[in-house]
Image (cartoon, rainbow, N blue to C red; front, side, top):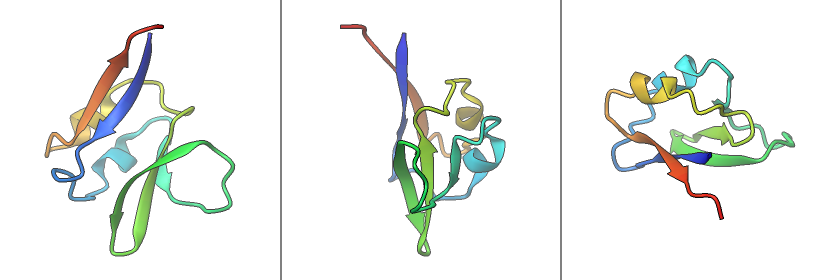
Length: 79
C-alpha cells in the first residue's frame, strides 16, 4: 500500500522535532543541489525542511515526535 505524509502548515511551528526524530533522515535541511525527489515541508526564518519522498519508510516516528499533531500518514488506495 502506498502512503504519503501530510503536514498541516497551520499547526506546524517548524520546531524540528520531526527532523531530529526521523531514523531514515528523510526529513532534512533543503539542499538546492540535491537530486532527490522532495516536498518542502515548512519555511521558518528562511530555513526550509524537506521530505525525501523516496527515503520515507512510513514508520510514523515523526508523527509521534510532533507535539502539535501537524503530521499525518495518509494511505493511498491502489489504482
